Length: 328
Image: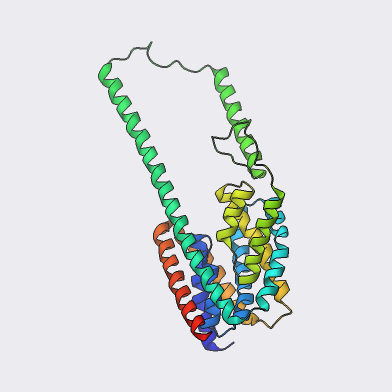
């Protein structure tokens, strides 16, 4: 590994890690163009080497989410195991594909990622605005109610004041709250919703084996073919197919990505040589950048960061498509 390539690997790895930590995914899609256009790797070597960066980033994020209890190990391991066949097939198919066609397909993938991140960021901001509006409305309503009560009756008597709860009722309320908390903990361990809208009699999501197998295979195929984590596909799949909550789906998706990337990397191990010093440098910088990105996430506006990253990915995708089509 030359000095120039090592110098290019340091900022690229930090940028990939920063995006992974700040956005929770998507940064690994920059690994392939960085390896090809800045570090002189072939498309096949780049898609294989990017799996190393993806795996290291998945391990780093998985540890953080596991400490917070946002990983469903059984569900993630099952979903990842079902996707190993697709990951194996995608790796073999990618190795046999023309490099120009592979890069053209990768540019299309980058455009899809950019569009998906903009759409997801817009939905999050709309949801946050709706929640803020509902909270403001409830506060205004409570203030109006208190003002009306003070205008209608300025004097309150002891008879109008609410009666103090009996100690036995307080004890029953505490027991009920603890039982509710325990029930929610059990539901979280099973990967089921725990919100206040869930009742005791709410049915659990019906398992759909065929749909789960097809979705897991498609996710594995994407990881094996392009050498990316595919978190933009894994998270919605875990939410829709397995019924996981969004924070839990994000943490569990890292386990799925780790399994799929490991299988794809093992499949490609005998197809060509990898520049392990370069990949180790890139992965180490990505791990450092991921921790920095986690700390910076609370100080940055998520929508602005997501839009900027999507614009960067779109510009790179168009440039890659133009270069690839000219070469073809």
